[in-house]
Length: 73
Image (cartoon, rainbow, N blue to C red; front, top):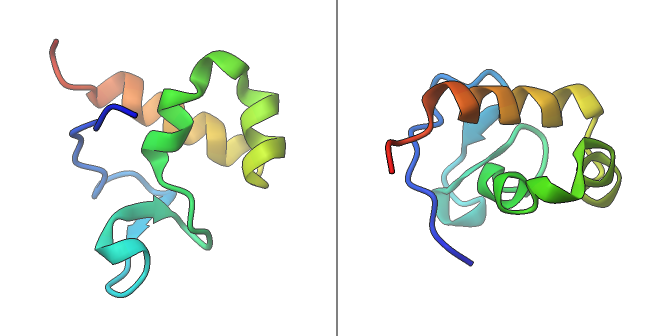
């Protein structure tokens, strides 16, 4: 899996907690990394929500945030 370099600090549904996932950004209340959603985006929002057990609005917010702030190629 490729590493996505992104500053998630301003995303309302992402948090960083010391001791959880080695301090990597995760979706609030979970152990799911936002980059996992980005990498698997082609599967669709419903698939992501179901397979990562996240509310569909949370998935949508992560994808919207990424689209607005993604690094230049």
